[in-house]
Image (cartoon, rainbow, N blue to C red; front, side, top):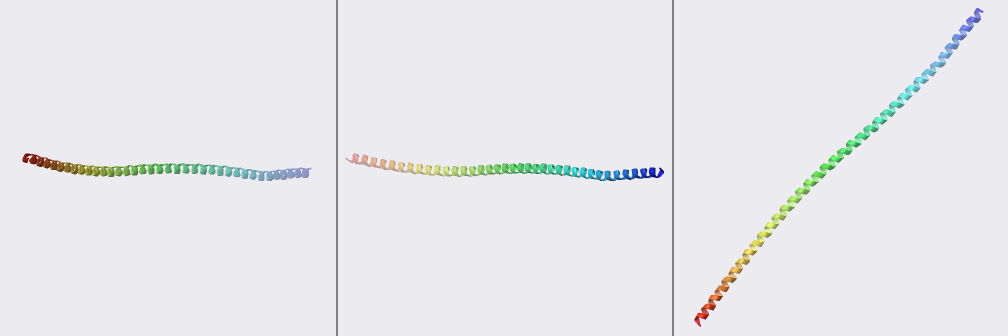
Length: 134
């Protein structure tokens, strides 16, 4: 009986040890599954962060391009204003030159008129002289 009892105790101890051995791989598998799940979660979080970072970079790049476009527009408008000012100045100078030419022509015309009047006066005086002689 003692032997049987010893054998039973020994058998129970072996069974408990076998059960523990079976549980250990299960716990190790559970730990590995948990680690894998954490890795997946970390990978997903990293991917989300990367996407968010790319979106922010795209937004910053877009804003920078908008600023550059705005600067170019302002520069273009300034150049247009400068071109318009130069063209207006050129037109004003041309107009003044034309006015001077018109004035010179008017003076020349007046001088010719004066000359014609002088000739007419001379002619009238000659006619008067001729009439006086008759």
